[in-house]
Amino acid sequence: MIDWRHWHNEPYLVGGLIALGWIYALLCGPFRNRIHGDAKFPRRKAWAFYGALLIFYLAVGSPLDQAGERFLLSAHMVQHQLLIYPAAVLFLVGIPDWLIAPITRHPRLKRTLAVLFHPITCFLIYVSVLSAWHMPALYDLALRDKTIHVFEHLMFFGAALFFWWPLASPAREIPPIQPGAQILYLIAITIGMTPLFAYIAFSDEILYPTYEFAPRIIAKFGPADDQLLAAAIMKLGGMAVTVGAVGVAFYKWYRQSSSRGKLSSAP
Image (cartoon, rainbow, N blue to C red; front, side, top):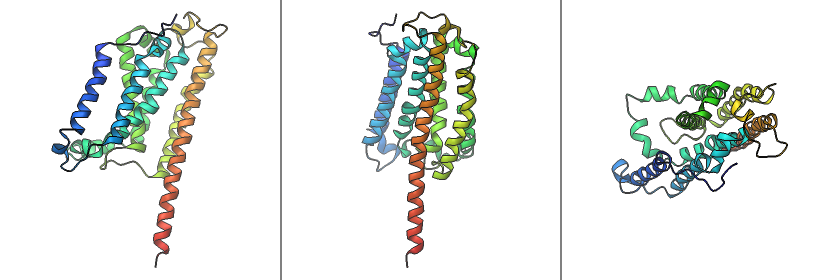
């Protein structure tokens, strides 16, 4: 059974998150004037960044990890949703533009970064990484090997950063795409992820042996029910985020159109 009092305290997890938070505090605190002379401490962005670290830990360090690794595919899917949506977007929102400017403004990196963070590249990376890791052989291997499981979650988080970059880029040199293009990008992501959802939801067999033979922790909730619920969490979670993001993009588009209309009608 799940030990709801068990929280992971492995050095690579807790130490890694603390190290990230410490480096961020130094760069945005005492060292910020060396990076950008008149920069102020980004209080709101700091809240977002540390919120991302907290959500990351809750996803992979709380008892939810034990539930997802040993018992329920649906719990594992909740982990992925936390990494892909709130953790990744808050991580990007929490980075001040001046903090990464030394990289994004580097003359030798501009062309490479422009290709790497192009919406088509971001789309391909995100859809490919998530689809590949949900193949039964890789997915079940990650459940059996802790090191591979950590690597899987890091790749999910990294792919999510690519997914969000065209929408929430912190870099002035590679800014978010225009609102109209954002809507098309989000629709493309939804279409690109549909085969994976259909593969999990409509499979006639249990895809992942770990969950097929896992002890049942909920009465009358078998592995087929768990697999269908996991697919629903993937689809409904993604759709909810997409609808919200499309709404934000449409509002920005409307504001831009209104501003242009006022400028064109001005004497």
